[in-house]
Length: 251
Length: 277
Ligand SMILES: Nc1ncnc2c1ncn2[C@@H]1O[C@H](COP(=O)(O)OP(=O)(O)OP(=O)(O)O)[C@@H](O)[C@H]1O
Ligand SMILES: [Mg+2]
Image 1: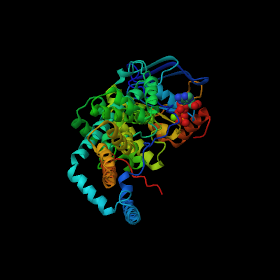
Image 2 (image 1 turned 180 degrees about the vertical axis):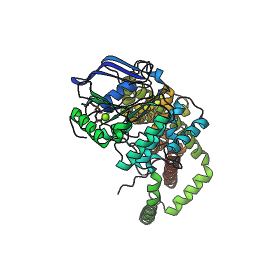
Image 3 (image 1 turned 60 degrees about the vertical axis):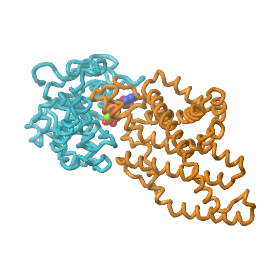
Image 4 (image 1 turned 45 degrees about the vertical axis):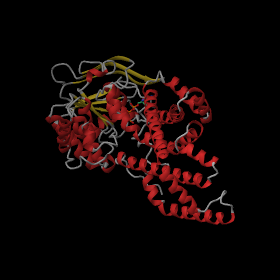
C-alpha cells in the first residue's frame, strides 16, 4: 500500500497524555512517499495532537516518531525545508501582504528575496489568486486567505505537507474547489501528504488511504480509497457508513 | 526548539487579532479639530476677561503673552533646540534599551524574573528621587538629565514590549517554526514587526510625561534649556514669559503627538481601521 522505500512518516506505539488525560495510545501508522493519507476522527480524538507530534511542536511521551528519517521534536532543525503545514486557521501575518505571507517560508529557508517573490507569485497563480498578491490579509476573504496559506505551505516545495482541517471551515463550494485544486497539485508534484479532518466526505474525496483514529486508542480502521470507490455511489456510501460507525458519530 | 516564546496552549486559541487595533491617533485628531479650536477660543476669552480684573503680574493680557512668546521664540530658540535634543536623545536611548530588555525578558525565560524585578523596582522609585540622586552622582548637567529621563522611560518600553511578546499568538509562532527558522529569523519575521505597535503606543503615552520630566530636570539640574528659562522667568517676575513657555510646551507636545501619529500611520498601514461606534 505504501510506495517502495522508507516511509516518510513512521509512528510506532506512540503515546501522548496531557496530565491524566491519555489522548493517544498504541498509535501505529506509516505514510509512504507520494501518498495522500487522511486521518479521520471525532472532535477531541487527538487528530491535532497527532499532527503536532508529527510536525515536532510537541514530543510524544513514548514510542517512536520518524519523519523523513529524523525525530521531528528532538531533531527539530533537521526537517528544515522538508515539511510544510497548512493549519486549521490561515495564520497569515497581518502586516504582510498576500505575497509576502506566501514567501515567508522561502525567506526562512534562505532563498534570495527577488527569487522568493517570484516563486511565491507563481504559487499564488496556481491557487488562483492572481492579482491579489499585494492585498493585506484583512482585505481578503476567508477562502482567499486559506488559499494564501496553502500557497505558503506548497511554495517551499516540501517533501511532506501536513493539513489540519484546512478546508472544513469554508463554505461547501469553496472547500470543494480548494480540495480539488489541492489534490491535483499534490498529485502533479508527487507530494506526500497527511491531512486531518472530521469530515468523511473530504477524506474520501482526496485521500488514497483513510485512517480512523479512536480516542485513547490507535487506528481503529484503515481503508484504501481508489477511483472505483469514488465513482460508485453505492460503494462510496457503504464505506462512508462503515467509517462513520467506527468513528462513533455521523459526520 | 528554535524559540521559546512564552504563551498559552495553542489548542483553544483562535486566530488572534493584534491587540492594539485602536483607531489611529491622527484620525481622532482631525475629528477633534473644531472642538479643540472652540476650547482654545474659550481659554483665550477667559484670560482676556481675567486680565481685565486681575493685576498684570497675576494674569497678563493674551496679547502680552503672545508678545512674550514672540520674544522668547526670537531671543531663546537655542533653548528650545537644546531641550528638544535632550528629549530626543533620551527617548531614543530609552526606546533602544527598553526594547532590548523587553525582548530579552520575552525570549529568555531564565533571565525574565530577574529583569522583571529590576524593572518593577525601578518603576516604584519616584522621579523626584532619581532627580536628587542624579545631582549627587553626576556633575555634568547633560549626564544628569539624560540619566533622569532614561531611568524613568526605560521601564515603560521594557514592560510594554514584554507584554507585546507575551501577547504574540502561539499560532503564529508554530506557523513560523514549522519552517524551522533560526532564532534571528523569529526575531526578524515575527517578534520585530509584532512589537512595532507596542513601541509606538508607548512613545505616544510617554511623550507628554517625558516633556514634563525634561523640564523638571532642567529646572533642578541645568542652566540652559526651557526648564532653566522658565525658572529664570519666574525669578525675574515675568509671568508673561512663564505663560509663553507654557504655551510653547503645549504646542511642542501636540506637534510631537502629531508626528508620532503620522509615523504610526505610515508604519501600520496594514492595520484595518476599527471604527468603534
Ligand atoms: N496542550 C494541551 N494541553 C492539555 N490538553 C490538551 C492539549 N492539547 C490537546 N489536549 C487535549 O487532547 C484531546 C485531543 O485534542 P485534539 O486537539 O488533538 O483533538 P482533535 O481531534 O484535533 O479535535 P478537533 O476535531 O475538535 O480539532 C482533547 O481532549 C484536548 O483537551
Ligand atoms: Mg483539531
